[in-house]
Length: 156
Image 1: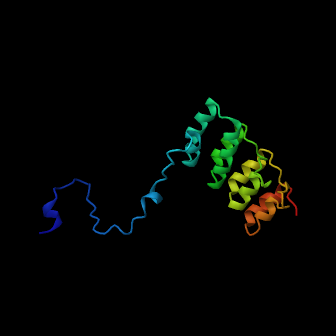
Image 2: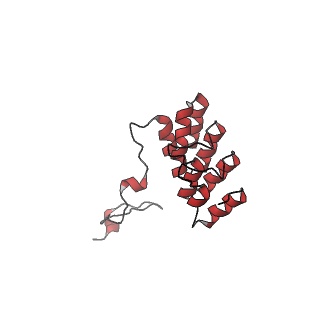
Image 3: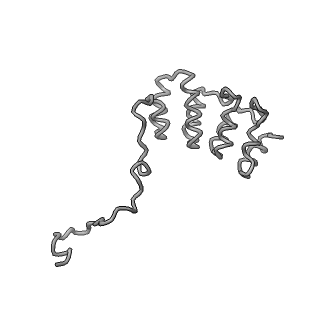
């Protein structure tokens, strides 16, 4: 007996029979699942939910949370969210405890679009971290990032 004798006609639709689903990636690859304990604003950023981010920014977000969210958006190179955070007042020259700037992080992650947004917002292209590192040092090997930084005045 064929499969066509078992199933009714579908009129342009069909069935897919998966007898072996090992080819499917794990569910975490298919969808991003937010952390339940994560702040709703940070959750919107981690999901790249630009409309959710803008809505929360419109209702007001404390500067420390807004600035901290910038680091999270850079890791994904989500330039739209980075732009929304900068427009809402996030500091383009934000530093961590070791003096690393968000531009250095963008350079290190290879986040070219986000680096461009930071530079447009006034990020200091020649800022030094506590150990003398600059964004240009982190960009070595990424010619597009090196070009972007040097076009904006970066030097050794």
